[in-house]
Image 1 (cartoon, helix red, strand yellow):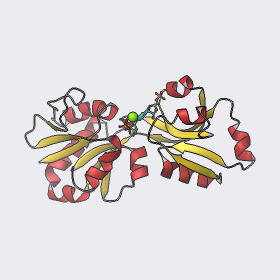
Image 2 (image 1 turned 90 degrees about the horizontal axis):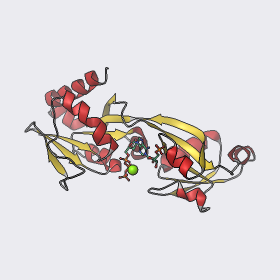
Image 3 (image 1 turned 180 degrees about the horizontal axis):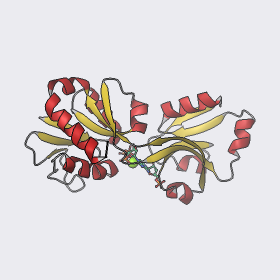
Image 4 (image 1 turned 180 degrees about the vertical axis):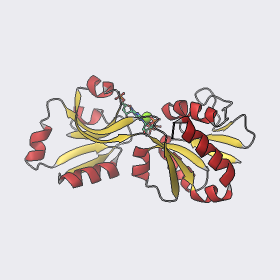
Length: 212
Ligand code: PRT
Ligand code: MG
């Protein structure tokens, strides 16, 4: 049995064509079904529906053989025990620093002020601001980061941006582009040895589907 961990939403949607290229059709819609283990047209392939931030954990501990996860999630989680053969170039976005339009970020940085930064991405933020020599107090949030500067919880946020519409709707502006993000295929290293042929087949099909 080959088990693939995916999260609902954008990663699932963008993975369907890749699975199809590997001859795998998921037989249930995770948005409609409450099932967490989905069957496919291949009797030896199944899909687990997990939280996006839990994909690396499932793959690391062998609950799934393969998974697809954002680089943001991998950087926060760490990639111990994970083989990362492919950047699938799906679910693309960037991770940025944003502030209220009326907050003078450049001056705050220049003056060496201590910044309060709200984010789900504590590890990425700590490393980014340390490299810039900016002192920060990091406030861990689990979602709706855009709210924090609006109510004075923080001076800045570090969050994912794709169209920029969410920032705009909340009167926030992007002041730093930390890095580009896309989703990666991750593979359990032990599974790769034990189930080499079927896993290689999936990796190769994904690679040719994305033109690599
Ligand atoms: O939602 P949940 O808490 O379960 O988990 P999650 O938010 O980690 O999962 P999901 O499915 O929302 O995101 C999975 C992965 O998709 C992320 O880890 C990223 O690698 C990738 N991705 C790509 C994005 C976006 N684009 C994105 N725009 N993830 C989130 N967003 C959010 C962003 O956080 C912000 O709130 O969309 C909003 C901004 O979008 P724009 O278009 O308004 O700029
Ligand atoms: Mg989300």
